[in-house]
Image (tube, rainbow, N blue to C red; front, side, top):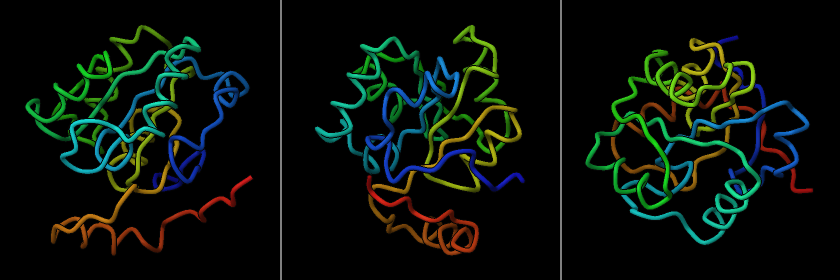
Length: 163
């Protein structure tokens, strides 16, 4: 189903790096806000930054696809040394398809990580790539975010228990 993620983790930092090789994933498309960092924060927190550095060292290819504008995405992506697609138009497949093309890896070997059902998970499904859902870092305060989160509540997967 379009709203059902393929995998679920509490946060990106909870994804064990050996998970990717076990699942045949060579590259990740990463959402930005509330997946890698909180909204409008220019850097990830130390736990997520450490995970990211370890993932990069392991050889996992990564790039950011965000619905946010270039002025938000570019400095963050440059801080991490990643390529990026701003204005990704998720849940449409445009941003994901562009990222897959730039990564140069078959879609069957790519997954995307994000914190929203209606943009990230559904976007993965429309683009034909696997989705990894992570719970948002912090609740958003904006009106439309609150509405969207309320509407997605019945579709949310169960939060995994800590191992």
